[in-house]
Amino acid sequence: MALSDTGNPFIKRSNPATRWEQRVFWAFRMATYLVLFCGLSVFGTIFFKGSGTLFKSEFPFINTTFLTEAPETLHVFSYEGKDYEMGDSEFREFKEANPAAAKVRTASYVYSAGGIWPCIVGTVLLVVGSMTIALILGVCAAVYLNEYAKEGRFIRFVRLAILNLAGVPSIVFGLFGFGMFVNFFGWNVSLLAGWFTLAFMVLPVVITASEESLKAVPKGFREGSLALGATRWQTIRKNVLPYALPGILTSSILGIARVAGETAPIMFTAAYVVRDKLPWEDLKNAGDFFFQGVMALPYHIYVVSSKIPQNEYTERVQYGTAFVFLMIVASIAATSILLRNHLRNRYKW
Image (cartoon, rainbow, N blue to C red; front, side, top):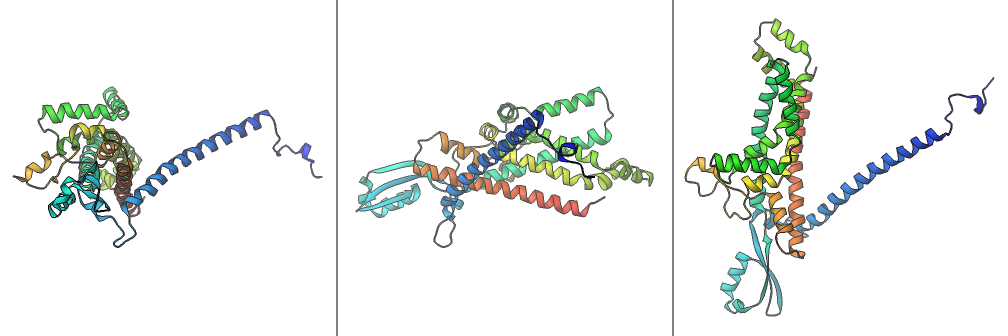
């Protein structure tokens, strides 16, 4: 005999508790959609306005000037009934070819012409150099903490200190780098100072993620290797690190996102507002490369957005720079993801 709805204990019935649960469910759902919508709005605005700066309707369809030249002052003027927009170098050539144009009134807009090539180079160098240092130091520290160190109060204190460092504001690391590397070590504003400052900033994330990756490798891998006569370092190098590499690369992806977007640390230690020469140009010896200051995309965005008068010309530079910046970060992160997936497919257990 079939039970009626009133007698079936498995049918959900509406009551104050279930109604409250439904309200909470929809609140969480709408909050998630709101965050997603805000993120899409921000990235959509950058993509829409930035692509207008980076791409054009004529061949080669890419604004090569924006990607290959240094920032310049934009001169806007009218001459013989025509309106012109010229960068500083082009404007000087125009005046030499047309002496009468020297008396023309011009409206000048700083950083609104030329391109962002030195900023791109500086950003890539800062990210690659700092992440290399952070991964080397971080993996070494993680190997020690997980494979060699004996559990005790001191090791627990070290782990707690590492976790606390992950929450320190970036400007504190910037001031630390300025005091330590720029002043005390005498490196001045340079790539080397920026590399170590950014590396120390992201080091807690790399150490924590790397240690967790090492813990995830089964103990049997270590025991089997040691039982066959391998030393502890041979075991770590051949049987532990290869299988932990995918997780370590995950930490590098998180580190890239933080390192690339920081403005305060590089403002104190590595970046200039304007620098005409690239780090490898006019070097007296090879070592001077590491002591050259650079331009960087996040600092350039900060300067163009907040330190000069705003207008339609600076706006297109802002969004174009932000668009290129996101593409570079995404490219570096995608490379790490592809390498991580390759290693996951190669080392399975």
